[in-house]
Structures are given as C-alpha cells and as structure tokens.
Length: 229
Image (tube, rainbow, N blue to C red; front, top):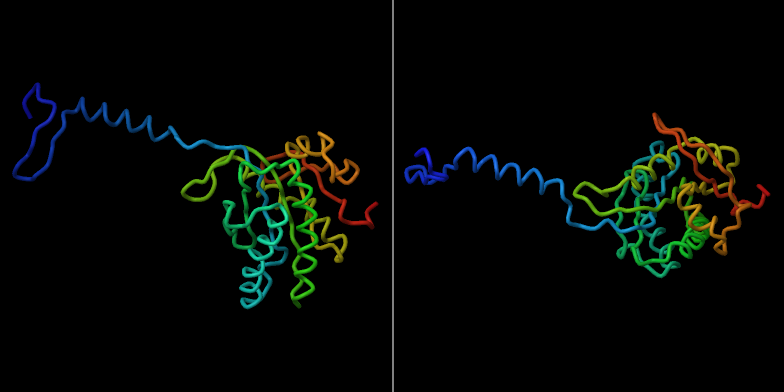
C-alpha cells in the first residue's frame, strides 16, 4: 500500500486493504458503540415463580408442571388487566420469570398479584394430583430485554431472593402452605411504605437474605396465612 494511501483495492483477491490508522479509528469507534445501548431501560416490576421440588418429579410430572405454570401465570395476570403475551417472560427450567409492562401501575398491581397468585394456585392444585408449592420473589427496577434474557440487576436479584433460606423455611414449616412470597426492600418501600391499600405493614416480616457473597434485606409476606397472625 502506498505510504499516504488510506485504502487500496486488491483486484486479484477482490478485497479492500485499509491503512493501519483507518483500522485503528474504526476499531475505536466500534468499541465505543458496543458499550452504548440505545434501548431505554424502563422501570418495571418483575416476579419469579420457582416450583418447589421440581427436580424430584418424574419426567411426566415435570412436563405437566411446565404446561400448568404458563396457564397459571396467564390467569393470574388477567386479574391485573394484562396477559402473559403482553409481558416479557422466559422459563427458568423449574419456574418462570416475568416482567410486567412498564405502563402498569405497580403500586396497585402488587397487592393484586400476590392475592391472585395464592388464589389461582389453590384452584390449580385442586385439579391435579401433583400439588405445586411456589417460592415467589417480586422486585422492581430498570430492565430491558437482552439477547440472552434480561439486562439489569433486577433479574439477578429476583434469583437471589427466591433461592434464599427464608422462603424455603416458610414452606417447610407448614406443609399446608402453598406459596412463599419475598418482596424486595425497594419494592416494599414503594408500596407498603407508601401505605397503599391491600398490603398492611403487619402482614410482612423483615428478613435477611444471604446468598453466596451477597447480603441484603427483604420482606416475607405472611398476610395470606391466617395461622401466622
């Protein structure tokens, strides 16, 4: 390539050779744009359902649970005025992760989501021999859809909350309990802390969450269990 030429066409190979300065400039610009996500990350409420004892089920029961869960999520979300198809969701192997539409009023939706989860799971369990118990976590924050799932810390935090010890212990303490719900401290402050109707403060127990190297606080919802009060 001539000394002052920025590009040269190789007709024999049908290629374009770029000067090293041009290559450096283009690489620098690409590196910058790779880290600039043009998509907004709206503030959204999300929840995860985790089926207790999923791995111990037979292959047939696992398949049936995978069929029951989206149907259960859809009927639960209908009570919020949305459908599963109008959300962003994905299966987790032994559960489901859902982010609600950004224009949904989360302060009014959270009480309905919790009550409807309990009600519809009980109705679903009445129809099947295999009784499903759910660990549930709910959080809120900026999130967007990424190539391999969801972008933002909310999805990661939901995983920590739902897999923590307090909801596991809550269900293990009474076999009659079908749902254990953990609400993040952030979401709790936005809804319960703002005295929104439907979720009295006395229906929550403050808990410590320790998962691997992370320690945080959250709230265990006990309002659906009359034996707890």
